[in-house]
Amino acid sequence: MRIPKGHNILIIDPSEVILNGLSTLMHQLVVGEPRLSTSWDEALKIKNLADIRLGIIGSGLIHEWVFRKSSILKAFENARWAAFIYAPCYYEQDPHLDGVLKINDSSDTIRSGLKSLLSIDKPEEPQQPLSEREIEVLQLLVQGKSQKEIAHQLNLSIHTVNSHRKNISEKTGIKSIAGLTLFALSQKYILP
Amino acid sequence: MKMHTFHPIKISPHDKLITLIGSNPHVLLLLEHLNLPLLVGNQKIESYCTKNNIDTNLFITLLTLYIGLPLPTDISLPASELPSIVKLLKNSHHYYLHEKYIEIKNKIHEMHLVNPEPELSWVEKFFEDYMAEVREHLDYEEHTAFPYFLSLTQGKMSNNFQFSAKDYLNHHSDIEIKLADLKQLLLAHLPVAEDYKARRQTLQCLMELEFDLKVHTLIEEKILVPLVIQLEEQLK
Image (cartoon, rainbow over all chains, first blue to last red; front, side, top):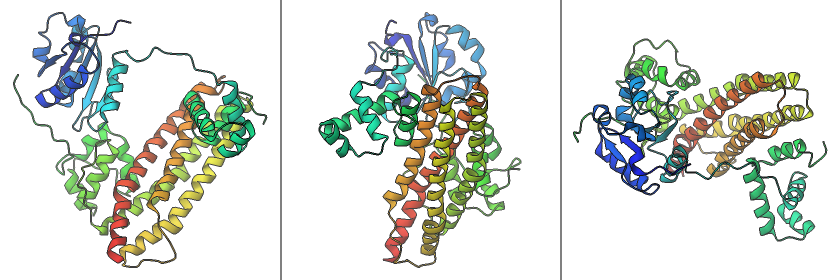
């Protein structure tokens, strides 16, 4: 998928502070200037509306987007939409929104949300299987062994065991020993 | 570019409660946890609070959390509000133990009935063990921590109980991690058969519970614990 450029992105809100803040974050992700607008009437006059791939709507213009949605969605036919919430807003669960960013999110969270909305995240990868060593560590972990005991039994350093433990949680998405036990049972790494 | 419309980032005492509920149904749960009437009519927050004898600042602070807005950095609630906060937390416990956990337990059982794989019986066991752990923690809060907090408001500080804010909050984090793991197992790892409906309902229940637990932890972390520490300092 081609990475969108600045001119493929529309940021819209009545507040210049919000527009400039989001525009600065966007500069770290894409090349070129995003298009900024303070009203929907102004935004709908932009040339080549179909080029817009992502529209970020600030709280200040969300309500108008909701009321004018059918014509806006038609005009920006290729755009995905995200709300940037900085004030109480009653529309953030609108089904036509592809994402919601919040002012109290960290810059990293907002940046990763924008990356995901721009589809410039890493390509989807199949779930990575555990390595043989990770399976051995998992089997001992769910038996209740400490990292020190596992290191001794497998002749590894505690640091290496800890690193396997982190990889197991990252690959499976499971953190607790109880959850990992259920995972190990379901994969038949241990017997019931 | 023209500038117009100022949008406040705070809930105002003049906002109508019915409008907030309409867009944030979680607020209903807050009212229930505070034993407040759900029949809110057309009342503004301020008059609803006065009528129901609840501090407007406390109510707005809790509403802010329940609708997912950032809390102001300068929350200043008087220690006299501590009993209301404890009451809310106790009522949340009742909701977890007597409503939500039972609902989830039944949904998992339904899932197992239509998908009789051994994995699903292990999920039932996982959830039962989890519930036992939660019960133990809530029991500790109700019988040890809460009475201690309330005694502080009466100017007494027990020497028999050493409160640790860190341990107290870590317990909640463990509870949240296991719930997230269960969600992950159901969405990514455990075999699906004809259990779509029950699995979807289980996941929805888990997510509702997850939201309330998250707010519960924030109430403890941002409101309760600072008040307790403040009272302890005054009594030393």
